[in-house]
Length: 335
Ligand code: 2P0
Image (cartoon, rainbow, N blue to C red; front, side):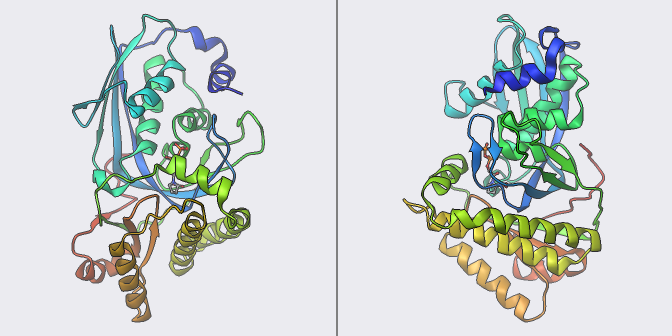
């Protein structure tokens, strides 16, 4: 099945309708997976092998302004994107799904307010904010889960970036992915903090898209991953419902380490650790031994995201003075 078939199925008669407005804008937060998405069962539709679970980053994310024009143009943080680049082509392919006729062109201006090197500024909040902006521009008035499906067609993790707070992405079973979308979990945890520990801003050598595919096809450990995810998902939901921070932190850290173990056992090996990554982990483990409740998670890059509670903020910042502390329940901007 192709992406365009999914779009036709969701938009049905709305697919040929011209935009209702000449411009629109939308914000979407970044998200950090506490139980990771790592591996696809369908590469065209970005359908995952397993479900995943994330926390959104409050007012940290992307704002996308979309307007009609006579020519496609894309700007990311005021810089013009080359539409012949890999990223430009991917974005155009996504836009083409919604182009009603050949004369319809768009100017996209996306601004992010997260450290670009943190592995956060990437695709998730960008495609989620673009999806919401398209919905506003065309006046589709789609349901939230339908917007999540559209965002997934741009980038898998984008389907979790449509809401604040905790979000579960249901893997789904259907071939067309109509049951594979994000769902907001009704739970608040205002004391929770995420510290962005940036250890390197260099671009990664292998994209997460390629790395996850290589892991699925070559790692002998990958067969154990789905069972680990289903175990961790139920522990995370329990932790969120009972506000059990240690259970949340232990589960998230263990899930990230298991994901990286599957990558290390892929061939050629996928290794996102730098010496600085390991050193920071060792500091965190020592601090925990000494009684400070701090955990980490790591995505497809060398940087760490620290998990702790507001009451321990000063102690955490003493050991990691350079971190940017994110309050996921900050009320100033809501998706
Ligand atoms: C996640 N990551 O759950 C995992 C953990 C990175 C490590 O989702 O190919 O950019 O666009 O569906 O969403 C990064 O992968 O991949 C990712 P595509 P995506 O956050």
